[in-house]
Image 1 (cartoon, one colour):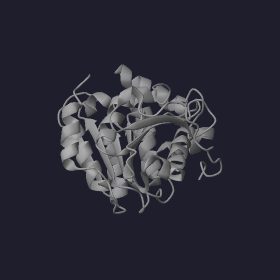
Image 2 (spheres, helix red, strand yellow; image 1 turned 45 degrees about the vertical axis):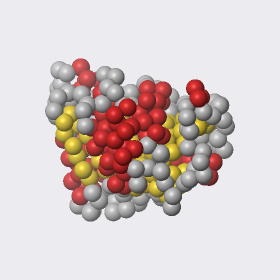
Image 3 (tube, helix red, strand yellow; image 1 turned 180 degrees about the vertical axis):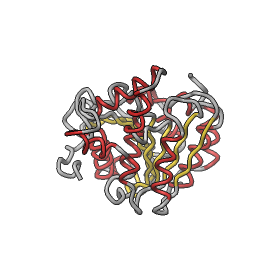
Image 4 (cartoon, one colour; image 1 turned 90 degrees about the vertical axis):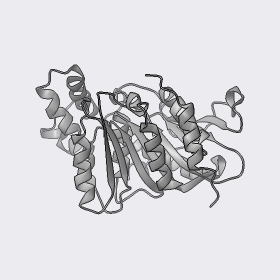
Length: 300
């Protein structure tokens, strides 16, 4: 397999990134519809287009690739926003940094909890991956060699993809920046919290579950939202990063590390000082480098 990703490229790209504070299978996505031209703004060597992977207006993704005939590993990026807000546009800078490293990059939008309850968000991520794999030649993408990286609520979706079924074909790793591994833990922590972010996270988890609390008719939905409960031996290795004192605590990832560890699936957790969350945490000194190095070890 020919790729153009190197550790030296990782170092150069990081230097340029300066801080700026089987449901899918039942509903196959349509072939992608191009809505943006390639190579916007004259970006040297890279091409970009926005494609639809479903019929809903939010079922779209930006694709960045290098049209030089070389087959490249893929990086899927999932934005955060309490499951109810946010947009792929906020991840453009990070997506571009991975495209500059030589990866084919898929920066996805998904239905928000205001439009559809769980598991719509996981279904959308899986549908985006399926669309990318079906059209791998179009984007010089190695369909059997990719990672998924999510931020905050997007980290929950990414991790849920990682523990979906008995492994997802071609998925070699999952990265979560401040990932919410356990909405149930967030629900409990937010009940007695005085910190506004923890209270908001509890309310966001309830909204994600369709407005229901964990007991009663919504118990199955809440169970489906718990990433660690779905661990299996063929799941992809995971890397998670938290700040020690942020409102999504490192203890969230310890739950995943324990469940996957028992099955022999590697989980690496990094705890940074401070309170930075999600993309702000990613931009803390050294974090992007460590994430990029881990991805390189997984997919080259």
